Length: 414
Image (cartoon, rainbow, N blue to C red; front, top):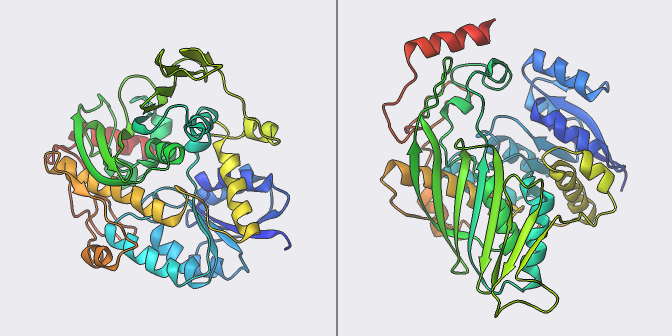
């Protein structure tokens, strides 16, 4: 096999991914797709190479591509993945995989007719402490895992006008309508990766506390949603989507019958492995505080990559799958990706319905697909101008004030 020819759709986050793919000798970035000329120009300047940019996705797909990175808007990956599947092009998809339940059905049906490889570009499981978490779970000393927690907590300075201009640059942008359950994969995927469990039931409650922003078009006043899943192995997870409480952190904990493992907030990457005195394995203390190692031949590249090294590792994983002709492992495969999207979507319905639990459909089964094939409920505006069909906030009539909206528009228009 010669170099793998990759095209990148979306020149914001897509440039980060392109840079990491370019570190791998058997990959060549041969095309970009971006409708915004300003973002395209800035992206090329960052990338530092003369690569053709196409505004039309169909024309972009005609460039003899082996694989496509989908780094377009958060909730709009599925239609473009389906176009790739129709041409048997491999897909590296930013999270989430599908913005509606019906899209999940359509995505899987198209995938199963193709010879494409699909991998979710979820980087948080590959952070050093989460790789160590999987290693400990796989080692078996914790016993059966019965409970795990995952928090992706990412508050943003409410006075940061540069964030508005760079990331939320028009009122109907998806970030202004993002329910707190939806950005789920950074908290959920590391737990699925470490334990092997798959959610089968979800419920969620909101934490409503609007930010004191002087300038915002944010239609969500929730700081977080506390999402609980019941899993196929009898365990339970408690996770957030993208939360905005307290101080910034990424925190994970797994609890087994014999002990527990967690990364410690504010401890510069240190982890704690703990056992009871009567379950302590030979060679271990009851409390083991340490900083894990990468144990990887690409450590230099990993250390310089974004998201705690995860950006480089998942890029390498994707190319390994293509080179070896195999689908990625759980939770990077397409069925796991659609399951996580279902947790996000149905978790928000639980929020809107007082914490009512919802079963996560098994889309391997045709009866589940039939149930959801026409379910297009969405809290987002579509690129075609279509309006949301469900509220995005737990307080359904919440809106920013006229003054906040006016200040926001002044910032993004300057």
